[in-house]
Image 1 (cartoon, rainbow, N blue to C red):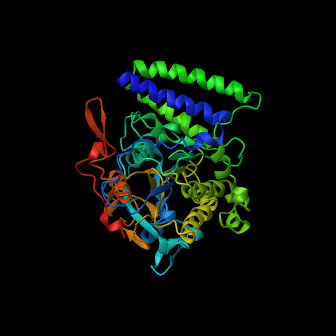
Image 2 (tube, one colour; image 1 turned 90 degrees about the vertical axis):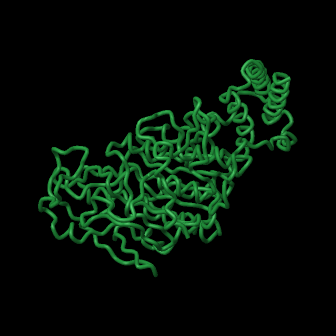
Image 3 (cartoon, rainbow, N blue to C red; image 1 turned 180 degrees about the vertical axis):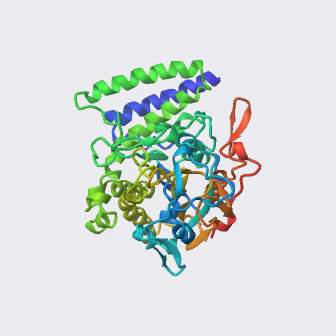
Length: 468
């Protein structure tokens, strides 16, 4: 009976696959209503979706968010701590390196922020700034695994976006629940591992979209012109028959289940994606808000604007990435940091402003973060090395406390010393904002219940001070 049910289910999907290719056209769309199963929220959520503006490389906290007058005063002198500053390259460590940038109070909250991020400073009353982050590694690859999957070593664990869609499912029927917007110039360190579903069902992995070419926003989605509708229908029929036979033999195979669901999603995406990524539909005012009229901000602005269009259409999680690791300022930290900030500052703030004016900020959680921070001592003459002991990130919307700065580091911005927040705490807090309990959101993997915060399950906590 089970095998018969599997066969019937696959036959239904085979019919849908053929119909969506143009055989029955729009009639088939009324059949495409099944959503992937989801656990559902454990408590009332404060947010419905997340946009993560991931800042690859490790932004310098003392040059952007964490003013340190003492570091500036003693710049050029040896670090006075009892032990040396932990770095990736100890032999290259020098003396204290003060920030050349001025900090000023902003907004009614008076949050002090750097002069090189004037647009983010302009939304000070909307953001929740965490100045006391810590992580467990000064290595990019390891720190990125912690930031995305909660584990420093394992390369097969699900990313945060995958956990979120596993827990809550999709908010739409025409687009993937988890979309990734990589830099056209290349992938970040760790590549697609940053949005992998790991051992969760495969349909929860991130789907990359390209930006700027609405004709091919998703690879392998569009049927080539040389293939006629009849030929395409025959192809889908063959694939469906093969899947039917395989499903009958291995009904527990989640990869096949994901593949069948992907066929259904792909059918809907063929008509939905081009419109979703067509930024020409936006007003000139909106395009200028995101900096699409300026070479320095155009590329990042396009991805931030597309992120808004996607969450507007019900995408659950959107990850926006930079090429490689531009914040990795091992040399000429001041100029390098200023240049990267010039490209991301306006679009990042524009996303928050745009969401608010459209009434979407309360239900959308924006996360601006890197994998770690930078050292208060120089690397070489004027660079900064990696630092895991204290760094900053900010959140906006989604039930977070606006205009609030949380925690702090020592006088040099090196080590978090008050109201410390670990990456595991951050994961637990973000899940909580979306209505999910990090201890209850679990998946049975090889005989044990795995969680996002599994490595630190008993200590990871929801940082309630960050919540409104």
